[in-house]
Image: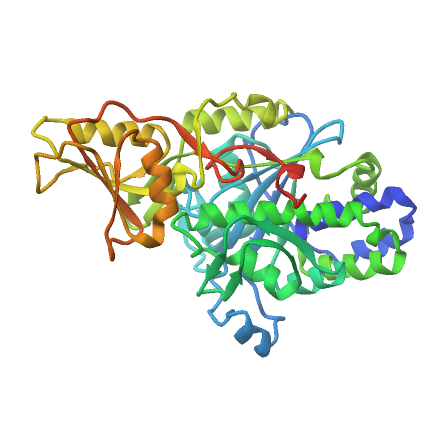
Length: 453
């Protein structure tokens, strides 16, 4: 978040902030060499690609704040957030692509920074590349996966995140439903809220608000980023040189960047992006082809949809807006996106293969099915049933919308995985999409669509 704040702050260089001010800020940035000895890199595309890496460092947070915002766990020295930010060649658009930290990845050969051992390429979760090989292995792994050349590298931790938000005077977010996460302490009723530093940190860290875990968290991070850009560029707060200095010191105090990202680059980017606004930004998450992809020695991972991801990253290389590729959907609108709903299918009829057919159809529409349909205890079911725990009633209604004529049946204690018992009346699965355009697993939204009205 703070790394992208750096980019938005730079916009103000075009509003009269002098070279001397930015030069002094450059001295606050710690330097790394993520491109050392890199060979056979992807071809350079048009525009500029910045790899934003957020680590879980928390050494500057006080003990009181650790307890209040539940930051007591030991840092894992791995990447908590990974994003590619593409700045278009005409400097009129920023495209942000989130890469899930649990993505299945294959590392190139490397030397383990901790043990010094030489490793052949091996499977890992994407966020573990940093722990094994630092910025260099992280960049190499991302480039191998995306075929996008990384031009600049920015690395942040969240130790000064709260201070940055506080200096800005808070960031406004809106939520259609209550958000509660007992792990981080987040507890927001539905509505609009101006989040100060501590609550903002809870908002962007929460992973247990719903069943979608890290995917939903990335969406909230993107939503917060859009709101932060709106705050920084529309309020005029940073046009005050003293505020500009305070915010940038808070931001840059925890940033590490490659040696090539210096004063001149910051000023050039600022001048070029003088008209930047939330509507100039677009956000998406790399398309996921398979949830819970088990890998021996690694665990449960997220496997990308190769074809869809390929199209996405080709658009970045070709400097094309991602929103231009969104097809007009005729799907029925629902409250909860199918990508956030876990489903177990059972065949409630004597018809062989019906369970598999229903499972495949639901998965094809985006639902997170187990891909292991079973036979129901009762094989005489006439009407298809959607069984659900009452705590997941919104998800159940969204699933039922995809199964016309189905019966909703509450079952206390069933848990987050909904159950579909296919009956003799089953004919088809109807396409549905989230009423909130931001919820979809790989949907693209612009910043002005997700900030508060």
